Length: 335
Image 1 (cartoon, rainbow, N blue to C red):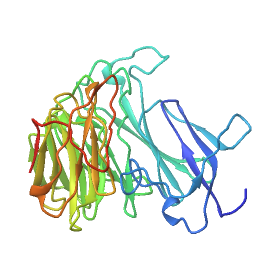
Image 2: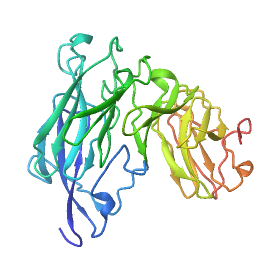
Image 3: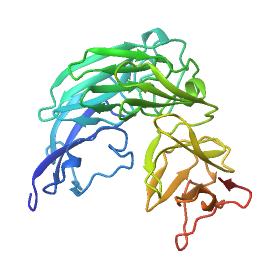
Image 4: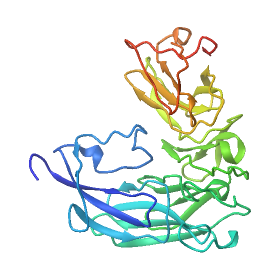
């Protein structure tokens, strides 16, 4: 390797293995050393300057492999010497007998970043009843979030659970009792003294919990058909806004209080699954099915000047732009 200080990051997926790939980061790229939440600390998937290997195999570009208790669709996260990943076992594990709901277990696994050694793992019983079968991603789809105090996981109706870095449970919070055939997938977001949870599946709500105690600080109701993880972004006037897409609208909230700043009504009436992406002062939002593709809303200082959006029909979710102007539907409105 040349031209920078050597670092390592990981790659994981639906397999029952955690695999660390050898990767090189440029010198001074401090933010790339930790990866603290879904799509990174800013929720935008920005890894900085990094050279990813184009090939890997049993003996090529692999630092280590560690077997996990079961599969999972969540992403691993990194804090210091620790890697955290979730998975599940006991019920509808691919390639294994079906089991019963009583056998379902969720797992939080802490792995040493350098060696791949399992430092500790916690097995959590599911709050029943659960869905009979979640075909595509199983029962561990929400990515953990970590900070100096520890790690927070979200397992749908089983709840939000906080651990310290030694594996001691600090608190757990109930955010609703409902389930859905597509399961839960939104990941926790750590913001200052708060843990932000999109509990649309569990209670059609957005919740803010106290980071230290798990006590509810505020909640917003009426969050329908939303599987995406909240994103914190700055508006044109520098104000932090919590962005969340849901059936029929994209909304912005005050992350500390839950006050609604604005809403952008849409014609997207299906599931809202992908988290929003923010770039160049524009918020991009996609639905979870084909047909109505998505929308883009531009941040401006006066919300009444907010650009609208237009519809784009197609077989897959996609967004098109022209000269920085975004519109999707004359029947939709922002304000």
